[in-house]
Image: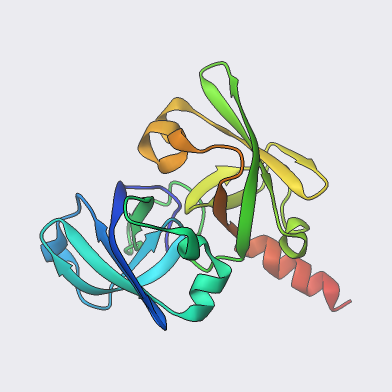
Amino acid sequence: MFTGIITDIGAVRRIRRNGDTRVEISTRYDTASLSLGASIACSGICLTVTGAAPGRFAVSASEETCARTTIGYWHEGTAVNLERSLRMGDELGGHLVFGHVDGVGIVLATAAVGESRKIVIDAPADIARFVAVKGSVAVDGVSLTVNEIAGRSFAVNLIPHTLSATTFGGLRAGDRVNLEIDMIARYVARLLDKE
């Protein structure tokens, strides 16, 4: 479980696609403290550490994970938002993020709004109904508040700190992003569907 507060920006060092996909990611984390089997959110995808060395760690992703996320578009040099798993007693600064990506969204537009940046994202139809104004959504692992909705698309505003502390500073129209809807929205919708 995660909070959606990014603590490092890593980069794909190597990627091997052979059935499962193995990705090696550079990081500023103290990799000596990473246990094999630990969970790290990599641009919002909960992945298991399968190896570590100074300045880098490795993860593996199944075909299912690759089909539902942006991993299929990653290449050497791709910037990756990183967050280590939440520990009991840690501050919950964002919202509960599970690292279970619901789908891939497409950035429709970006625009400066003062010092902040407005990002408009098209969500897949099957998850768009779970997105609500002033609700939470995880975009590439970042906990964000939804400001506007228009059909399947929604908008978020990113303050300068978020732009510099995540991969969003380089986000452009046409880019793909991992989306995870808020767990509370998912359960409320499920309960309402049973009535």
